Image (cartoon, rainbow, N blue to C red):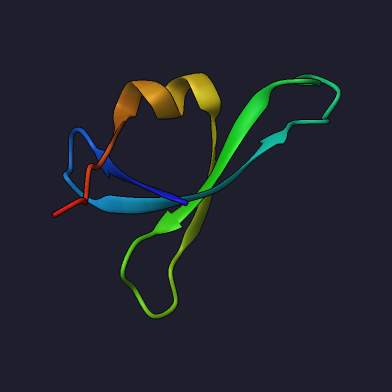
Length: 63
């Protein structure tokens, strides 16, 4: 799993998975499922993949 940083707030998030939106209005829309990073009971979120890639950058955590 990859860790991402929100480009505006600097908060870190863990990308959990990707999914497809199956509601009638947005059928087939690619979504990202992610959560707050480093928290005991992290809040979970879903966001359209294109928007996620615009607002988040992957972190390189190698030493």
